[in-house]
Image 1 (cartoon, each protein chain N blue to C red):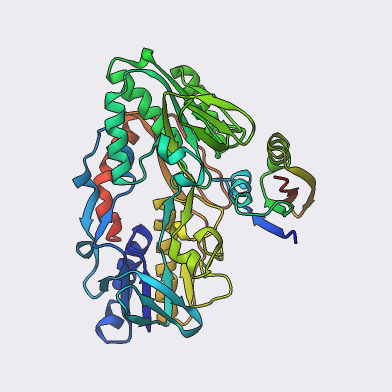
Image 2: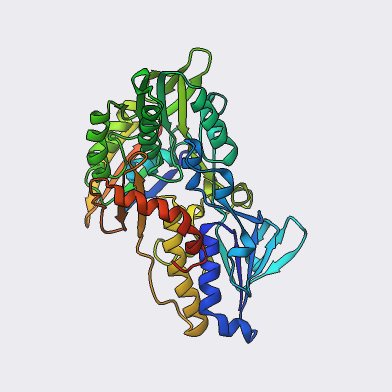
Length: 377
Length: 76
């Protein structure tokens, strides 16, 4: 069986390593060939960008060589796919190669789209790439006070990011001895401070305790950089001196160009993770259109379920388990306290009060991630 | 010609049915209808509330087997 993984992010990497271990014998015996195609020879720990923006991590801590994370036996190429020919069970790459497959996994991820709101990219800071996180860090360092507004697009990667950056900004300005010179204002697209009701129940009184003002039902419409005003679809205006955005996201352009899914998100079966209408094409992580968090942990848990199923299809001829919608998200509540939310399709989360212990564990996980990507944690 | 879209947000705690709807509305045409499938009873109130604030049209809600079907129309 020829298994082809397109994408070397968290989902693709964990799946590749998972399959390489489960199918080691079959790979040695030539029954299974496992190939991975990626756009980069580097693997980024994307959650680290949040810390980079406030000076708590440095760029070199975010990267490893992708090849160093992969189990021996995975045939890895830095050669992104340009054309998916699903009816022929093959893909064509930028480098001009054709890869045929029996089973295809698409895990190409998502990309920030600040340009989808007029004026946003030019006037707001964000932390979804190394370049923009560094720019935000420098802007924060030179900021001397005023009204800081956090604005949120939909859909966005990492549902906890809006809260986390707000709490971290509070501590950042406090540490600089200038919290009293900063009015911190949080906006959110729906009628409470977070999509998860229990998280909102915790976050709202935290905002009030810390003097963070907030405004709900606020969906960005446009930014007027001259007047320093953010306008919403709901008809409200919000003045700012420093605008921080969690921008809306799309799936990758190659998915849209190949007509695999609207906005780059592929219609995916919520339990089996196969592309709708295709039994030998599977989708992982941000690339799915599933109504769950676009987050590394989602990709991680999906990859474990899919790894078990693909291995079972090789060994038993049938999949053996469903993905249950499991997601686990840390929530940084500032520079030294954190909590977490764990949920699935059936069970909502019940986050506890933030503690230093959970923050320390999250700090440890920032290093342990590299073990997680290898599929060992 | 206006299309009808299904937003299957059953079991979605995060981002949740309303955020799923907001995300999908962006790329639709004026006049298109959206039927949101939600297992969260809160959708019965929060989707119409947001739709009215923004200026879209709330069409109606039905319930079957614990799933709420909230239908709206994109107006601008």
